[in-house]
Figure 1 (cartoon, rainbow, N blue to C red):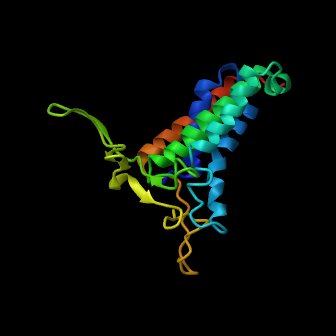
Figure 2: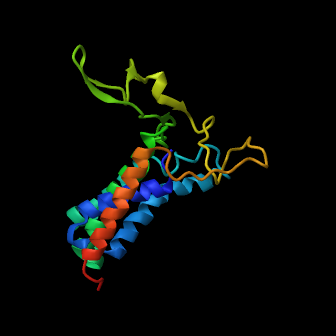
Figure 3: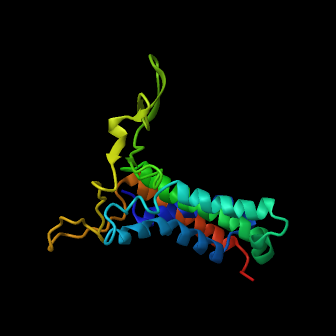
Length: 214
């Protein structure tokens, strides 16, 4: 599964691309911090079975947070966000929540072993691992998600919070022996390593070119 190192590396690439003139050390740290936020639900697993990749790894929570900010900026007569932090604050918040939390955090995990994307309204871990390719016989073929009638196909349904646990070095699981080896992965695949390194290098170049923070 993607490690925190990978999540932040991906978010660094997103931030370098989307923050524009607002990219500096402070804004990058905000994006990185928000991107790491979903992984804190692994600690909730000590008290709440199945919390990891559910409590903070869903589409609902970041979209609700962004909707509140969007409402504040776009629909209120006097925006708290704009009056406090200006256009910079809105851009950093948008990139942090949508690019960091939602894409680099939640969806990256969903495409690697799954996440409980609709929690708490629907308790089901959904694995979006798959392929997209062109076939000379079948045309465009995607295997990221499929349905059996109105239900999610079995190969995409991982389980619920009652019977699903994602192993981490912090929380190896309720049935793990006391002397279990705790593994903290950095890169599971070469592709994730390349993505991460590219993101960190891109952010480093942007930081060198960015003006000093005021």
